[in-house]
Length: 87
Image (cartoon, rainbow, N blue to C red; front, side, top):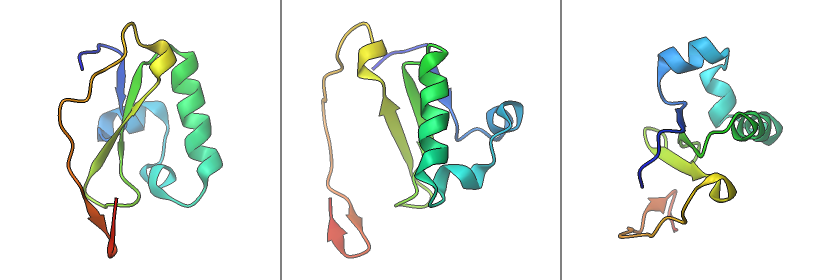
């Protein structure tokens, strides 16, 4: 996937400039993360790169498919195990 409109919320400088506390991205308050995503989407971002709450030290790519000029194709994937369960 190529996009110039990815908001990288794993970058400490971006978090600071955005006024977003890192803990709000991986905490239990889903309303906070939904609001951040809604604001990013409204500002024209096609995707977010965010820290994973389920797998600390990992990252997730969140795509706003309706904002993308073309649907992405999945070229590869892998199974991961989180706390004894496979996803």
